[in-house]
Length: 317
Image 1 (cartoon, rainbow, N blue to C red):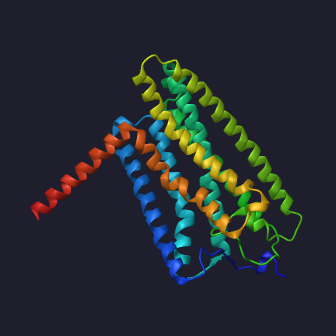
Image 2 (cartoon, rainbow, N blue to C red; image 1 turned 180 degrees about the vertical axis):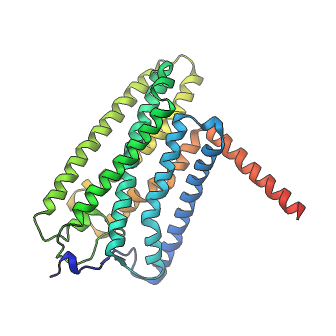
């Protein structure tokens, strides 16, 4: 038996038992990580460089891309290093940092998705009040509230989780440090305090979910009343990507934490955790850029300009 004061490292769950499969996972993770960096990096660059995209919707999208980069950078690099070096350990401080940054990005992103649903509601249902309700100062305050919510959420859960005495070993049944898995190592009934905090968080998250649903019910009612087909198409093109991201984020996270014990297994746990921790930040940029013509035009101009400058530089040299 050991307690948390004697634990200096945790052992993460490996994706495979053979070196060949671990190497395959490394290249797979590297490809996903580079795709996430490229996609989100292009969105951030396009929104920053094009003044036509300096609107509330794209301001929130820029913040979402930053959070996606932070989220995927919290889990994948360590998983890639462990797969490449055939290693499972993570330091106690590294595990605490991973918990903090993962839950910080997740809570801030969920708050931001809620704010983005309000942005789409005002843009479509109250267009005449859009400039008043979502001015520059209001947008900055709402984005700061989302980041602040994530920070407070992460501080509370990280401090509460790592103050618990741990005596059930140091093996975490997950490829990254996750609060439910660390609670399984607790040997004290004080873990119920963290469970209670998780329940309160779930209730608040459910409140945000209800707000998003109600917002989109109002949005779809307003869109269906638009007389022109072109107007309906434009409205849907700005709403459906956000709705798809919300569904992906909520569905994968909910299934990961609420799946029945009867279907639980280490392999399924790895797959599900990969779906909710890696897939959303990796493909959010793709979802938003597929149906957003303004963003696609800006990215096309940006890539063309970079290509032309590279040709000019190579010709002059």
